[in-house]
Image (cartoon, rainbow, N blue to C red; front, side, top):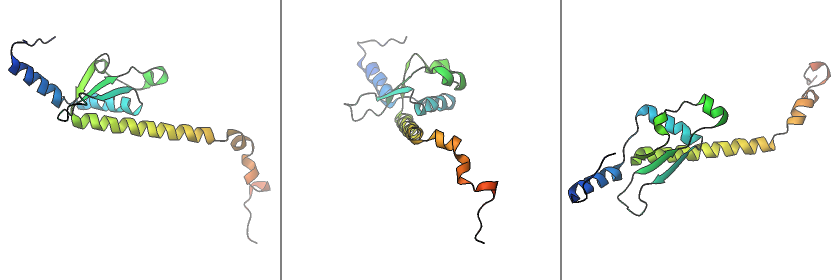
Amino acid sequence: MKSIKVTDIGSIKNELNKYKKGKKLTIQLFNQAARMAWLGKIVLSVLDPEDPDCRSWLLYVQPLEGMAANLVEVDDELYDQIHILDAEQGRYLAELMRDGLTHRARELEALNQRDFYFGKFFKDAAQPVGGEEASDH
């Protein structure tokens, strides 16, 4: 853990400025965080909503469960800590989280409207007898 001397005001200001700017994740970690964002498995918040100059974001990645835990690869360094992201990556993760939520909501609504019974048991009803299409003769 890094320590800062409380008596050195300049060091404190420099450290605060680093946090206000945030840090970029590597390409590999960002892609993993983006997948997690699309799945809705992140918690994302502006670092300091009361400071108009602060544009960095706080990111926490929730562990996957079930089938997704076996299929989606995520490095351990994304878990169990809060990351401070720069404005660009934080904003993009927020967009991905919204896109994923919208997509999953549409899929669930379509599933709720789908009629499985008639699709399976009456699929031949739309075809003419004998399997030939009707002609205009």
